[in-house]
Image (cartoon, rainbow over the protein chains, first blue to last red):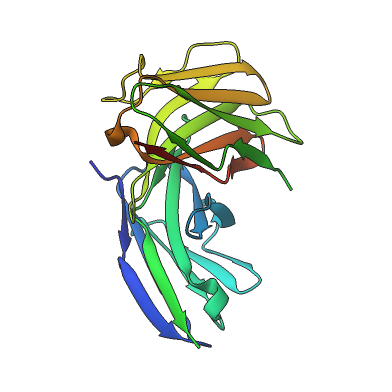
Length: 112
Length: 113
């Protein structure tokens, strides 16, 4: 059972565009929501993370928007570049647990 | 920032042999380490969770006798794929957790021929 649903599965934007990736969850016990970037043949790298007591967090060109009542969160990439082309995963962790639950991933392509 | 070193990055082995993958946290002590398996264009699938000095907790459907996990210290965990078969070919990734969050290794591409 997939506890974190991620969309879209793939996304193509032009350089400078603002791709948006969405995730939704059902488990209200989740208290930590990170986003990871993965290049082919490499492990995931943490981009940015948020906790449910804030509605938005920005780090550089990456912004997380969090809607606690809707149980949704999204990643926005400002001024996207071809080097941002990668697979992005959202994840969530329960308050009482240690394991991360991952979304299905979004393959982003930024065209020059 | 935190660094997790995973070795080897690629390994090819013959069917029936065993392969060991190492995961080290270089500049921090990991309270918990995780092992994942990832199929092409798919998400990460958690195989097991291990805490230093205790037995690993395996996810449902993961054979503990086939995928041996040893977490001997706060900085080292190993995954041994025993009696490997071609269907074990995959990308294996470790992750280490400390108080600040989760750091992933660079992954190991295992090919069983």
